[in-house]
Length: 118
Image (spheres, rainbow, N blue to C red):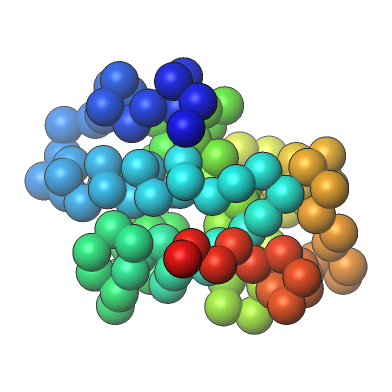
């Protein structure tokens, strides 16, 4: 992992969900460039597979959007976030396409681009 993306070095906001949010941010940092993961997949990696909505909340509060690549997270159908917190869906699309991920009609083909964290 890139040392600049080391979640242990990231300043986190003091919230009651701090520990879980830290795990979410760490999981998102594992998603390689040119790949995406779903909210549910990130929740499972963070230790709570049923917390996909909490992942969305955490990413919306991403303290370091240039470091924690929240643009690599999509919904279970591959849809981009309609209200991507850091510039809207157009910015999420731009960031993904810059990494080689094809976005068609606001969707990413998960068969081609989903990260299989094995």
